[in-house]
Length: 214
Image (tube, rainbow, N blue to C red; front, side, top):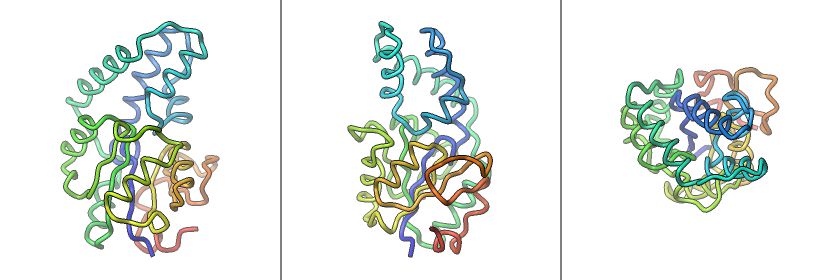
């Protein structure tokens, strides 16, 4: 029986992963690292930005001020998100359906706290979640399970009775490491996510679907 559902935010609830990837790609390209927004989403969606940015820059031998780069990134994110934040199709309907079914809900996002709360407020869904856990609240980001275990603890749910919905491979790995069931929201069913549960649309997820997960 599923007790709780934990959502990633960017790319699962809000159509904002593309903004993250665009800005991160521009920053890395400046340092001579030729990585596209699509490659960032595929490899690093859900990973704390500080972790993968510093890893790639160090590997490249670049000199950089991580704090300055992160300030630049979040300033740009807040500016871009002020103009418009769209839901991932079906996200709000799914959240409302789960809430009506008395399912415990949480968000576990690698984004910073102010930004995450701002996005949820703009979509009018913040109050549906018993907890919003962000990358600032844990020592290690995805694929480490810390963020999901903390989210489960905050909503008083057992890990084995939680389902995580993710659009990033690292997030699925983190959910698996936390002992939770996982659903990968993918663009095509050939995606090599480490879960047997793949959906192309959130509308595929029902209470019956959740209770019959592998």
